[in-house]
Length: 414
Image 1 (cartoon, rainbow, N blue to C red):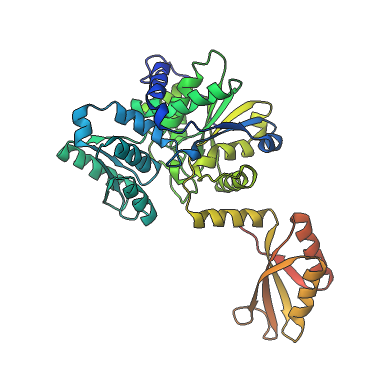
Image 2 (tube, helix red, strand yellow; image 1 turned 90 degrees about the vertical axis):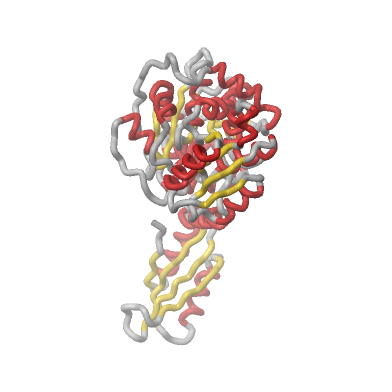
């Protein structure tokens, strides 16, 4: 947990006036997403939890706000030449969509290894996609080269006052809808969203705590603010906030305006994605679930508070989402793989299956292993995937198997 480093917030590059002006500029062309109470999450955490559903924007992320605010402030000459960005994510789609809607040519530079679905989605919004380099840094460098060569306007994903002001409109709407919010929990990648939202929070005329959230694998803003040097690398579910270097403008604003930065584990992110689908019936990406992940991981930190959580994006690969949901079922005991030692003789599997039937447990898959095992030649290992009602039901099944003389172990997830 980080402690806020108080710095002078005078002279910051984005003011409340900038954010309110941005909101007046963009509000007719974006979705006024709802801010709704979650009674179930409130009961789970001990806080009064309000969710801001930015995953319901047309491109399923808040990034549209800053992109549109920037586009609307370009000169006619700049609009005619076009805009360029380096992004493989929500910024690319938000910029491409609104540029196309406004008749502004858009070029998006993406790494060559960008999933085809993201390329197709961005092209579908009318942008020209250029694949360059194997990393984001290489794509970014190429975008800056094209900017200079062709006279494009580069639209940064976070380190630009126009972007920050546009993203801050999320908080304008949250406080209009729920004036009682006293705590904001906001994901941090490059820092554009939290910088804009904190600007609004500090102007409320009453104490409003602003808490940032990063994935443990990418604590870049945490490092910058606290002078630490934790590594920023790994395969995180929250790829939308997997930023190795935060912005210079945003780091200054976070240092001045943000109270705390919490780091969340991959397991917490998975749990939050799963809970939002189960409880709120809404799909979020890993970054979009980071705020709830922090709330779930630190319930005592927020008990009794009226908390606003931004579900900042909903662009998650369906296969990845399926894996997250199945892993959550396994961790809760509703899905399990049991490894059972049997004698290799007629009826062995039948007798085991009878115990599953007696305990009313559904068998999904059965795997026999005779060869690749350290057991004697007449022994075998059977893995049985099964579905139970809950952890207590699974425990009863395991007890029944062991009482019947079967050596049984659960294959655990990491």
